[in-house]
Image 1: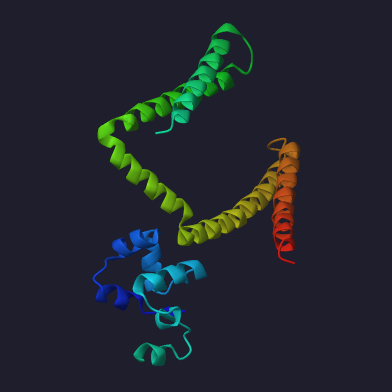
Image 2: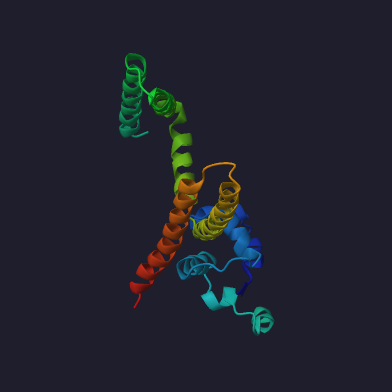
Length: 72
Length: 147
């Protein structure tokens, strides 16, 4: 599962620490998701989409065709 | 900090003191074990009581609140939970391997006549079977919930 969380987070000027606090998870979780080493649960994915005020599919996408989605 | 910690600390100390009293007043083969229990009870209890009064201080109230929140997040964090599950699985496999190797080594030692290891080998074999069977049974029970 790919995502553009790092880009979105930097756009709104949040640190990993700030984001972790807002989502009530650890900084390591944010780091693992950003580096695509861990796919978050549906619950956390919804919390992330709420934080960025975006739809889930605008943040997360499958590897297949991911780049195209990212450019859109 | 919850008052429960103080009570638990006092209970530990009371148990530790009781074990210490038994250690001094009786002459038997479990003295060293009781002495160990008394040390664990007294030191563990003292530690809990000290922590209770340390965090009770009003100037540490905010720090304690943050600490509790951090502990809560660490405990419920889904990524750490998945790591804990993986670490548990690896530990389970490593333990099974260690027991298997130990059975082989102690069997060889026993058959060469260096030591009497029959009971130990039997114990390790039973432990291996229980661990292996428990792994399968627990998995099946968990799976059954979703059928």
